[in-house]
Amino acid sequence: MRAKEDFYSAERFDAPQNKKEQFMLYSKFAKLELQGMQYQLFEEIFRKYEVPQNPLICVTPVVDGIVMSD
Image (cartoon, rainbow, N blue to C red; front, side, top):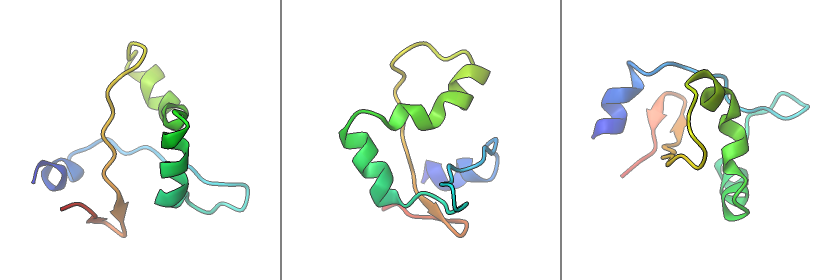
């Protein structure tokens, strides 16, 4: 599985946190995605790499270092 291979060599960015410094649940991300707002979470990355508008993104949840993917 490519996600597991890429996980160890990928550049890390801090995960989004709320005002209580809690990480975002995947269910909350899914709600943002339904509203087309998930791109806002990746703005720092998009700016760093000068990504054009409307990039294709793939999200693979990782919990405690374990890739949650079939």
